[in-house]
Length: 186
Image (spheres, rainbow, N blue to C red):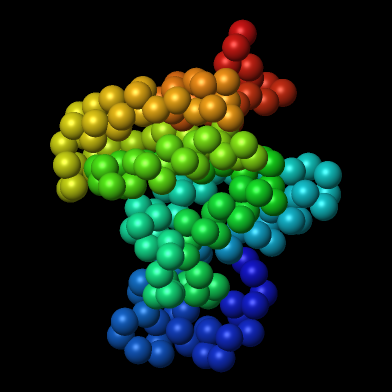
């Protein structure tokens, strides 16, 4: 992971949970934070063998909603995870993300649709579910059908007016799965 984290005063005590009793969320964040993957992506890119990777949840629904807030999330970069993923998508053309789990919250649909239409990385955002975890928020069937209905109604001008559902649930997934060893089109 990024060497800047280790330079932070008290990092190891904090990481091991010996600094205080509320370290678990921060400790986990050091390994889940999108910025933690930058050095790995750079390493493989420099070797000439770019790594294909999917960062889960596009940073998270709460991060999408709070993207204009000054409140720093947990983690070393103290920067909104949704914005971190967006910056990384611009930097690494082999990086993907998914929009699972937070889809129970229809307030984030407009943001997701705007991102699916982004000309530089919209075709690297995939539909996914976190079934059975999503059941804590809303029945999976309802989450799926609400998103699918809204996504089918939204077209993406930057991608030949394909609907957002076909982009996220089919084309982006097929692009992610394609490799020297597997071609979803064949």
